[in-house]
Length: 488
Image 1 (cartoon, rainbow, N blue to C red):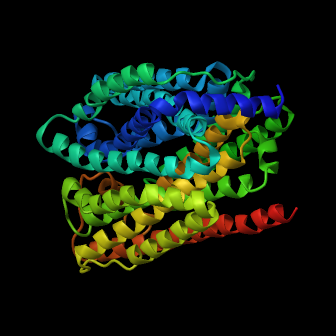
Image 2 (cartoon, rainbow, N blue to C red):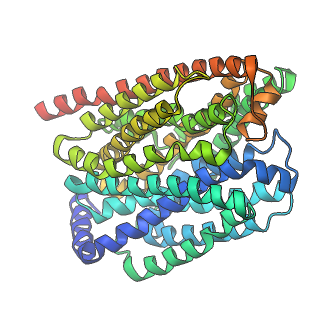
């Protein structure tokens, strides 16, 4: 099938779905919403999960990292499954797996079970998130996708807010198990609506999966992540060095394997598409710089400032709410001006927020934390729809699933390492065990320890500023590529 035939089929698909486009977007936003809820809500529940299941202090982090790592590894593969068997079918299957994983998490009985069931949840999350971008690309013409991704960002921001508010209420007044029970009715409702609204008429594309590539990448990332996580609670030793060396070696092996695969997990040929490399790397560095902010700020509020998890998290709610309102406008701006300006401006705005966070002290007014969260929310909501639109606009229609999965993979690699690096950097100012205890919300700080820890957080925020600046430069560099392409 040539590109003209693919485009004609895509146009036909657009026209068939116009009637139900609004409901279709509600389903897609619901998938993003419950994924976002499960990110923030679990962070608030970590202390209760640790106590309830007697999870070791150094293992509780894997309740979060395990979930993100699975989504990272599966994103391109399940995106490929969407191209092969239908994006809607795989998307609906993702909801079902996510619901079953949530149900299992609610019934967990020990440390191993909660981590395993979170991995199952992650499989469902990967099926949903990796195909949602491709579904939006199939619903909207290229000139309207920025606005659509802007609406999709509402789902993320609203989910994050609900995770904070509902999670705080559940942890305070109910059992932590209810943070997983609530996903069941939401997920089942989304499955029912998806079956009524979505009609998958897209052309099936034959693909081969890449289990060898997925295993080598997974083991490589796991080795490095395990070492970084251990460094947050123990000193450098032979075991940690071995995990780092082994992880790096496996990543090199992964690269060598992918160069020879007929259909590799990460299709390096996609980087030949103008602007694609810069868009994907901008997403990676933005995730590396931004994902840790939530945890570092909560550590600051729970540690030196002595706030409870719910009170600390509620201070961040205004940022998510205002950010959700900005998303659609930023998406429309991307449709009119192109993605470079709003995406780069969003990253620059986030640098300002990180600069404010880097100057917090134990006597700073809490209103400044709220202001920084609002600025950060505006920046993030400006970047995401514009960058997603750039990736899907550059992608050929027959590679929507692969491109959407690649975008999710790069963003998640940044997020996973952001989480680990944040704990490692923050643990340098006080004892590693104490820093980790603050992170999971089981203790706070007073006196000189509070001051020392706050100073340590400054270093972490400056490091994140550096990563965010790299993302901004990568985003800005697309302007030259677009300009050269227009002259040709």
